[in-house]
Length: 140
Length: 112
Image 1 (tube, each protein chain N blue to C red):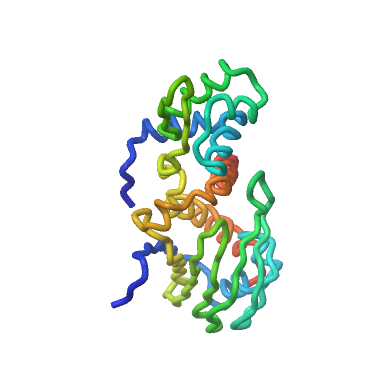
Image 2: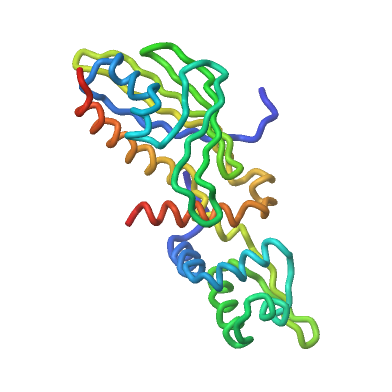
């Protein structure tokens, strides 16, 4: 039992025809991460604080504050992911398969919209709108 | 995730906030709390009929609520109506799927 607000989890899984060692590099080398995710200063060291910096938009500076939480080479990488008042944890898990690697991304800690914090919050709405614009812009 | 909002309402919300003046009016209401049409007109820097028109659009999207007191109409923000836009799971779901595509693309280009 915990007394924390209920949260939700997002899971994306994909089988990739590449060895875990290679995928690990793409997950942990800053310049490679930038190519598929975002500019960043990640170092795969537990406790390391870093940022993802995406293009700023009105009402959102484009910054995601993060901290490395778990590093198990070729197997598991976890970091916190905080932006726009939303604090989540992103965890990658790599499992070798016959033809490559099963890649699992879990983002956990999404608050239920039923929580009082959500209902009562008004201060962050401008940021949400900025975020919306960014997402819609990204959809073309 | 199930949201207690019909898609038609979401369309109204998106349309209502696509206009910069309406967005500014809505933001002002979230910052300042309840405001009269007069105060909002001063803030927005456009004519009162224009402000009233914008408020009607915001009202249809359920982003604002009004009450009359004497000759003044007071408006307040209803941020709950933004729920269709803060569906984080869907937003991040689309985000990560797109990034996974890019990751696979990168892996193809990387040396073995």
